[in-house]
Image (cartoon, rainbow, N blue to C red; front, side):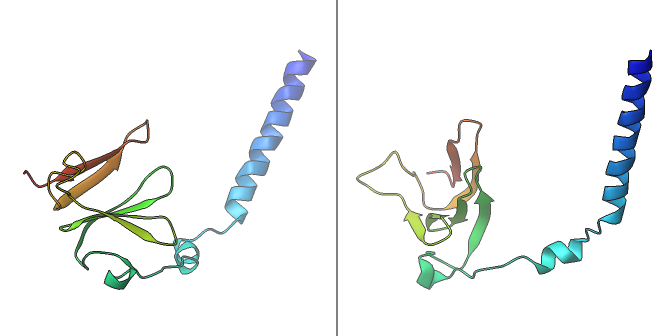
Length: 115
């Protein structure tokens, strides 16, 4: 019985400590937003157009941009453009990319205009 009371007392102290830490640590959305850093990507940085239809960040951290002229992978330093190609018909059936998503196996799924 003494062990149970000791455990409950220690657990209660731990809970009070965690609650006080949460209440005393100010975390405001303004603080988070003001610390964000943005880098502008443009046609000169290999985007095929300035009309981006979808932005997606995969689980591996890569950013993907769906456009009407293909889709781009951004690794934080450079972009790689993927477009439909007569020599690789299995890559994309159409360059007009509407949506991007990945699954639990880290496969990227690409939704294009019918074609």
